[in-house]
Image 1 (cartoon, helix red, strand yellow):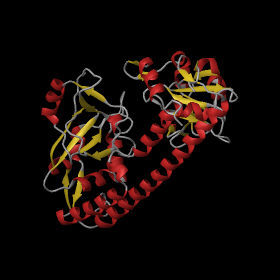
Image 2 (cartoon, rainbow, N blue to C red):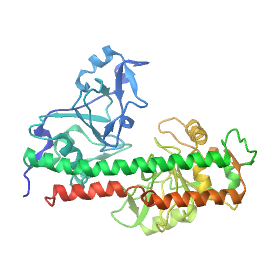
Image 3 (tube, helix red, strand yellow):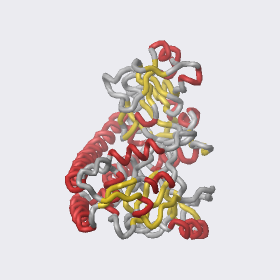
Length: 395
């Protein structure tokens, strides 16, 4: 049965967004009412990690964006389309202008049904067609209201949501297993090589510039994006867990690719490092995905003969180096890590025998958790595939 479509705005009692307190003369506080930003909405959940606070009086002054349990949140600036349902017991909060608040009658629209629909190709294509790309991509409240959602009867909405809840639970269990594998590899790294700052095992120290045959970044100019062509990777394609995320990719012409590739030429086994934006320091070893080009937001590190890719990646992922990357980031309009700073970072260099032994352990663990090697998105793709079937009436 093909469901009739309704505009999201017709189903909502409230569609609003927040604002930055300082733009209205208010200050942030040490404690008080949580103030949510994009980074507080991830993986369909609302988190108080790294949250800001405002005074109760500021919260009341920003009354239109008071957030309560049951509200539906969607990010509408910068990283568009992150969603979450505010859970029961969550403290009353507020938010900035990058977060939209939707409030609707659950007797007409089931929240989880909307959450899963917003991840489908139907929804993302509508959003992509409406978003405005200036310095930062954004989606207006009016554009959110115009989104057309298929609306089957409420029991059918709940049935679809329940199926997708089960699939999502499988995905989360798998992610937990992968996290345990990551924790294991970090422990093995520290046991074999020690802390890279204190260097308790006395390894020789060298700079990354000395250890890599090339440290560069991608295209600094504006490149015309195409519907198809050569893959053009940027910071958003390296997720917060260091996985290759190809769910939202750009393409460029062969001519542009050849020009960019001639300068940086990423290859299998190289290390990519986010050097611009909110995810500075996230990195991965290039898998076998053929030729591609890089944007300015990603640095390329080509390991030389003295350092193994897997050791270099694990070194980058240590808390010590992550702190260096973040602190070295230029916090102007947009945080940026200069190539010169990357080249100057001093690291311990164990013998190749020890590094290769660590590589063997890494490869063994990756074989057991192959989804992480192949981009870390198999579980997400599984849920997305089920979503497409569910919303097209095939489940």
